Image (cartoon, rainbow, N blue to C red; front, top):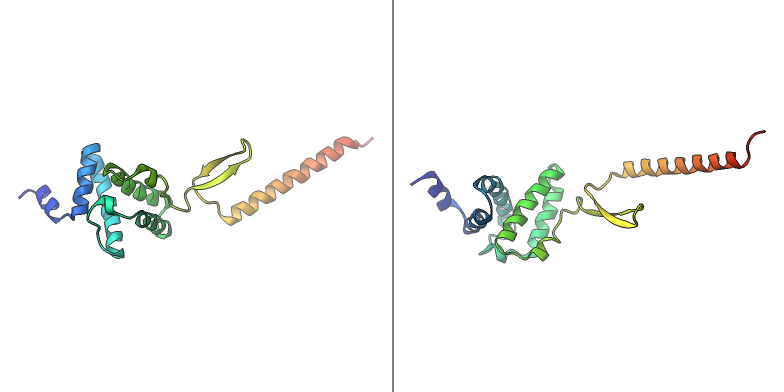
Length: 159
């Protein structure tokens, strides 16, 4: 029995489905990169209640719970984003609804922030620290005061 056949024998049915879905749409290199991230998700599923029969049977709430789990895990936010993206990609390739998958995000990564220049919203990648928000409002206040002082001087020049 070859090493690849041994790997396939030890795989759960869910991992086998993930491998098939990835092989259908991705290169072998992508499968090697994404499958370990899928296995982390399977470990998460096992810690909850066990593995569902198929990828399409994974509840939407479970995917949201995984996103929250990644948010609170002690890892860099980019690593969490890559792990969630890998799981969502496998689900998408397996036929899961793209409309549902688009709504699943890591809470601290995607925050709508008003962009005053265009009166629109943009997505901030990282939620700012409270200290940086305080510093930003101090800088804004200082700029406003300096501007008001400058306009007052312009109105009343020293003779």
